Image (cartoon, rainbow, N blue to C red; front, side, top):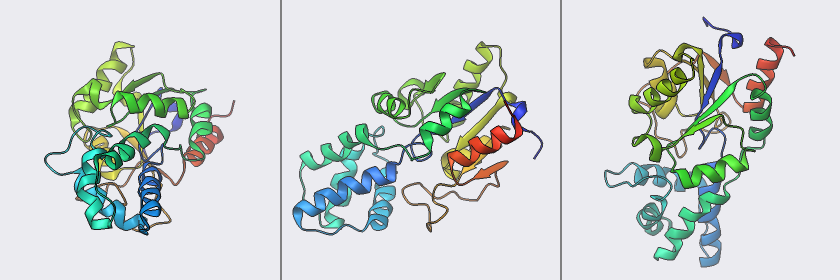
Length: 238
């Protein structure tokens, strides 16, 4: 590890999956629809079906795409068909919960760094997520802003340009994320220092996130945002 927490001015964050519990949000809505229909829904099986459907060529921007995804996965889960159920899955994004440690950890980190959100979600959803997290971000970049999704390097380069416009530099950024595929691998290839928040450390597989072709060893590795905030405060006492 070549850098310490004192070397960074910015922390950039993946949002969905790192700070917001999208897996719990999706499986919770599917389970509720299932209960109403008298069908039991296996959460991990539902996430595997979601993952395959989400990355079809005809996928739309997230989370609007959840309405389409529901139509693909509902028959395989024995759930009722109907556009109203797809809309329910999509609109549920506005009420997804943050992980229990996210808001407090972000507030602690914001005392020392400028926090930037980098999300493949659309702006309407990000605004809900940001409020749920206590509006801690100095800036936020969404798929609507960048016109592309991570792991496209252009998403990251747009953030680099923003940081440079403030007199900062990409080498002063620590990128924090749970997705090996969307964030950790590409941030390494772009020369960034990264921090893997392994949210699924107690669960097998990649859940609702696409599996990477190869695992990238991160610069920093924690299983929670609280652990990251604790490590920062231990190394940078007030």
